View 1 (cartoon, rainbow, N blue to C red):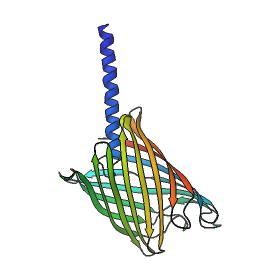
View 2 (tube, rainbow, N blue to C red; view 1 turned 120 degrees about the horizontal axis):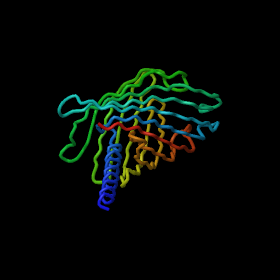
View 3 (tube, rainbow, N blue to C red; view 1 turned 90 degrees about the vertical axis):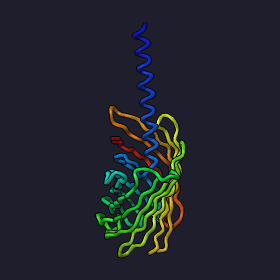
View 4 (cartoon, helix red, strand yellow; view 1 turned 45 degrees about the vertical axis):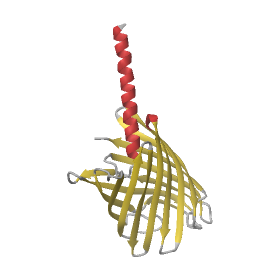
Length: 253
């Protein structure tokens, strides 16, 4: 009987430890510049685009790798590699499949928050001309500044990320405000907005998403799974509706 009680206590301890780990990872994921290696694989499905009700699937492969550059500073790299499949997005343009332009950002960020609890980072953003079709990307090199700031109080995270890219045929500002609420068991709910102002064409587009997510393990691999409806607004070519599905493979140190 004594051994039975010991076994029960061990199982409870393992369960509590697993939940604690999942909760900690879920909170780190609310921070775009957390000291956490991760590999997000994000699929965006958008429908009803433009005059011909076109459709687009964008698979974003987004490795996030932090580097310690000194006792007090990290350099966090975030790269977005888009694989795109679309049909009649630009009128009767037919179907295209291939790579879009890669966006790479490097944030220099203090390892500790400010006295007021603010986490922040700044650095360059690069637009790399990797698109395999002129309808899948600009096909030009671009660059500009990027910044992120957030605060985490208890179960809540509030923050935003902004960048601006200049290229020969582009001047574009991107703003991503977000607010998240974490729950026990590695669960989270995040209201996420992505706003883009194309100053070259004087075009504004946006998408709002309410995302539910959960951290879990497959064997020893920690994974975060998320799904969100996508509501588009602004611009004649904005989609009617969409869905985001996301898997993030986590590699805590």
